[in-house]
Amino acid sequence: MSLFLGIDTSNYTTSTALYNSETGEMLQQKKLLPVKSGQLGLRQSDAVFHHTQQLHILFEELVKNVDTSEIKAIGVSVRPRPVEGSYMPCFTVGQNSAHILSSALNVPLFSFSHQEGHISAVLYSSKRDDLFKKNFLAFHISGGTTEAVMAQGYDTAFSLELVAKTLDLNAGQAVDRVGLMLGLKFPCGAELEKLALKNQEKIIVRPTLKGADCCLSGIENQCRKLIENNKSAEYVASYCLKYIESTLSLMTKRLFEKFGRLPVLYAGGVMSNSIIKNSFTQKFNAVFAEPSFSTDNAAGIAYLTYRKFKNVHT
Image (tube, rainbow, N blue to C red; front, side, top):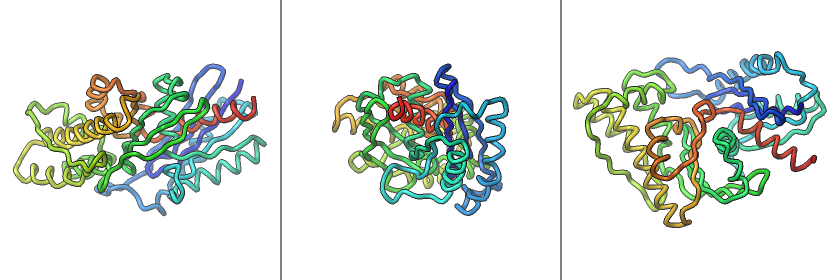
């Protein structure tokens, strides 16, 4: 048996995963960082503290019934995006722990970005390994990122080039800000979707784009006005998600115009939304992860670790 450990300490979730290369099974242990009621996210110092408190507990649970001598390599996310200067302190918790485990187990350590992990999780979950050998468009849509990248696959992994982005607010930030206006608990995505699915009124939105880049700050202002005008919570929630869906749809179409009709996947916590997933699967034949692999997780890191190890050591 060959196991590959992944660790990810992002801004909102502590996550560990083990990939079994013989069975294809992925074990996960992850936990959201605690956020006080009414607050939008955490300061980095608080995120570092909570990761330090949670990571060892999750790892102990992950390997409870596992022979750790079968771990062949360790992978860890060390930065948000695979570009120079990309940095967040919370990733140092996972990075330091991975270095310790690598030394203790005497196995190689591979470093990746959080964004690469998200995209890899989609490919693993959707069983689309074929995209590791192709060029494709990948959207990473979350509380900290709203970007589209051109991915160039080279069998064991891929390289990423930024081709579109938000010019102001991230989609996940918009979801959480509107959710808090409606009295929902952070992170608000799942509860906002439940409200939106109850809406029966027709909604028309007008996305704001500059080229393929988007502007999302208008969502917050429009939803505040809707609340002040006594529109229902269901309508406001639906308006927020419809605006994000329409924006991403238009971004995708403009990137198709520029690069051609490439395979396209959508990663990140916001992309666990069933409304957007159903729409884009039909419209673009898009690739999505299963919900448990859409939100922040170490599974994609574990899978990239396996592919990297296979390329280097076999």
